[in-house]
Image 1 (cartoon, rainbow, N blue to C red):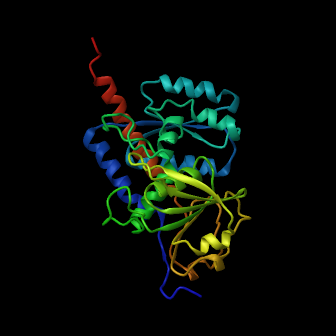
Image 2 (cartoon, rainbow, N blue to C red; image 1 turned 90 degrees about the vertical axis):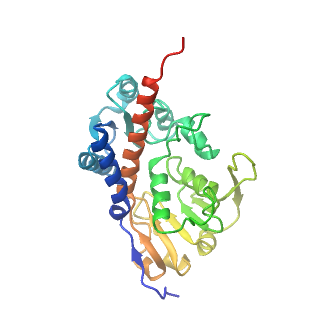
Image 3 (tube, rainbow, N blue to C red; image 1 turned 45 degrees about the vertical axis):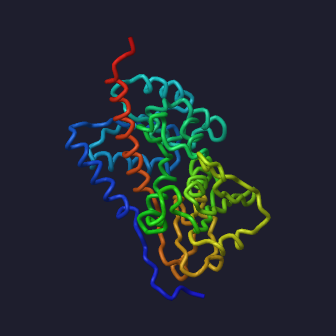
Length: 316
C-alpha cells in the first residue's frame, strides 16, 4: 500500500544550516580559530569526498583545517606527533585504513582531548554505558561519534524525538531499525537510540539484535539480545528505518517498509530502492553535511576543554 501523503525529502544541508551558523557566530564573537587536522591514509573515494566536505565547511564557518596525507605505515607516529602540537585542537582519521582491530587501535591513539570523532575507548565506553559527561562535576559533555550524533540531530529536527517527554526518554514508544552494525556508526547509534528510550533492531550480515534500555537506576544503559527474526519482519514493525550498507549492491526492498515510515540513508551508496517515497513520509537521502557540522561542533567543544585545562591553576 502506498503512502497517502506526499513524502518530504529532507536534505542534510537544511538540517546542518543552524549548526553551521551557530559555529560561525561563536568563532567570530570569540575571535578564535580552532584547528582540525585530518589524516588521509587510504584511497577510498568516500573518504576523499568527506575530506573535501570538511575542508569546505571549515572554510565557511571559520575553523582551521589541514589535511595531512600520509602513508598508512606512518600514521600512528603522525597521530602521536599531532597529539603534542598545541596549535592542533582536533584530530580525525579517514577510515578504513587497515580495517578491523588495527583501525580500532589507531582510534585509541588519538588523545581524548583532541578526538573530534569520539572514537577512543573512553568515549565509546561512555556511549554504551549512557555516561553523558567526561568528568564527575558534569561540566564537560562527552564527545559523541559524529555520524551517530548527526542522525540523532536529524531525528530531532524532523520530530521523531518527542520534546514533551523528559530528556533522556524522548524516543519512548518508537521502534527503529538500523541496517548496519559497524563499530563506528551502526552499533553506537543503536545504543544511543535505545538509551533515549527506543526499541532498536540492529541488522547486519551476522543476524539481528534488539537494543532496549536497561533497568539500571543510575545509568539506564541499553541491553542487547540476539533474536530470531527476518529483516522483513523487523523493518515492517519500524517507525524509522536507517540504512548504512557501504555498497551499491544492497537495496532494502520498499515492500518491507510500513506506510508513513521515516527513511534515512547514511551510506555513500543508495541503500533504498528508487520508489522509497511511495511508502515513506520523510526521506533523508544523506547525512554527510550534518556529520561535518557535528565534527566542527565537537572541535569547538574540545578547544574549550583544552583552554579550560590550561587556565586551571596547578595544585600546590
